[in-house]
Amino acid sequence: MESFDVRIILLTALTLFMASCDDDSDILKEKEMRLLKQYIEANNIEVEPQSSGLYFISEGGGTGTHPEASDWTTIRYTAKLINNRIFDSTDEDIARTNGLFSSSVLYGDRRIELSTLGLAGVRDGLKLMKEGEKATLIIPSHLAYGRHGTNLIPPYSTLIYDIELVRVIKDPVIYEKQMIDEYLAQYTDSTHLSVETKEFDIFEFYYIELEAGSGEDYPDEAKSVDIYYTGRLTDGRIFDTKTSGTPFNFVLGEASTIVGFEEAVKLMKTGGKSRVLIPSSLAYGILGQSNIPGYTPLVFDLELLEIRDGPF
Image 1 (cartoon, one colour):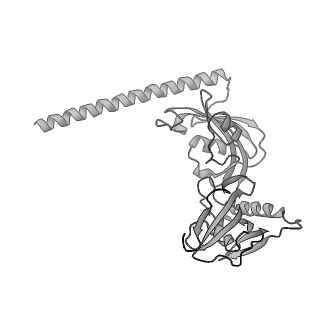
Image 2 (cartoon, rainbow, N blue to C red):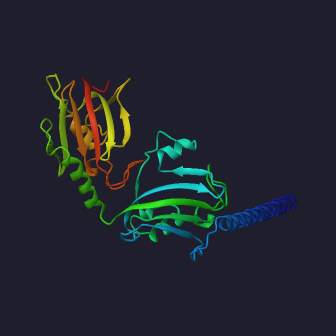
Image 3 (cartoon, rainbow, N blue to C red):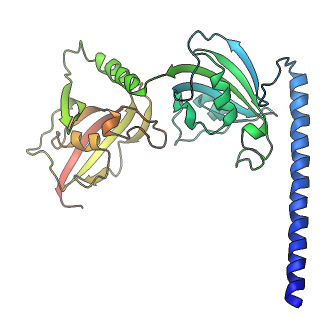
């Protein structure tokens, strides 16, 4: 009987706790709607919300096509709470000014597959835009981070995105080829640098010798190499670099780095410097990694400092 009474007490307490949580949620939701109404009135916003609750305010300027769910998009944006506190931006200057800068973030135009965008409000807003268009999206919490929020965004927070749809990409494979061709075109009229097309399996990468090495041998499998490097996108943005202090060390053949990087090192001698353009098929593929989206060719400047036997 005593055990039964304890269960009843626990069940009652749990019911009261859940009811209290629901009450808190109702209060927060009501507050969100009140603040949203005040924002709409204070900013003289006359557009009606979409059926989802999203407010879409176009600044015009778009002349291209609307993106579809299967398309990739390139976007620029600054995001803030309804109290105008900025919490995210693709603009490095804005991030620095608002104390948001992180060295791990790759600022600038962001390329992303539309269907993988986590925020329904942003995803739905972009579908309403044309390539080249700018807009403001006012996104209620049920289309954003909802009742949970994040470390920067409180629960039940309406978000405001000032966003530009820079490009709609129908075929990311063709688009990557365009990025590669545009990058290589700058070497067409060069009188001192030549681009060598190299093969690995069924794939190609592009190798440019910047400075011949003075060593006698090229590194081969199971050799340990010390490398300085700088990694860039084809538009010049640096996403990773190691050019001083303890060098990057890895053993060839142990899959310690992307395939194109390793294959380029095999073409160098000690003291040599090179530049290599690596298609995504020999880099991070169709899925990408961290700040690197899928279908992204990478450019590395390499300096081979030392070749050694074994892993040390």
